[in-house]
Image 1 (cartoon, rainbow, N blue to C red):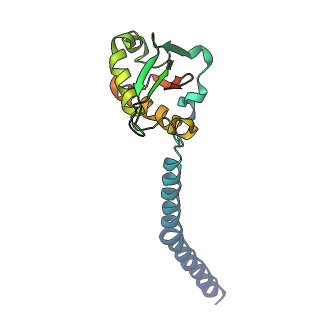
Image 2 (image 1 turned 180 degrees about the vertical axis):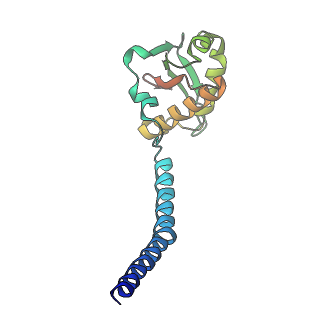
Length: 170
């Protein structure tokens, strides 16, 4: 009789274990997956890299970064805010990742693409008026647009940053 009661208790525990495993699989796991999707969406909105942290630009040493200064200051038109046409004049520099596989080939071709790069800057600046350039957020948006355009032009990500000096407007 004691063996039967022990067997029934063991069977009840196995049944409870199976039910709880089913609850975990069908309730908790899908909820965790939905939570992960939300986290991924939020991270993409605020532009976080969830990949390998060693490939982030912040992990490059100063010795692995080269700079290229455009030979002349760029003069680009701005969105007109009235009857007069305004221009922005500024120097441009690119920061490049020396460890990138495309660096040696494409960095030598930068001077050949000065006109195309100037066109990318014109496309980015024409969206903004002279007053808009006073806002730092607009400058960051221009910098991001230019960086994206240059990466598309070269079909590589060896350029990691675009910087422009003091912007003179007239």
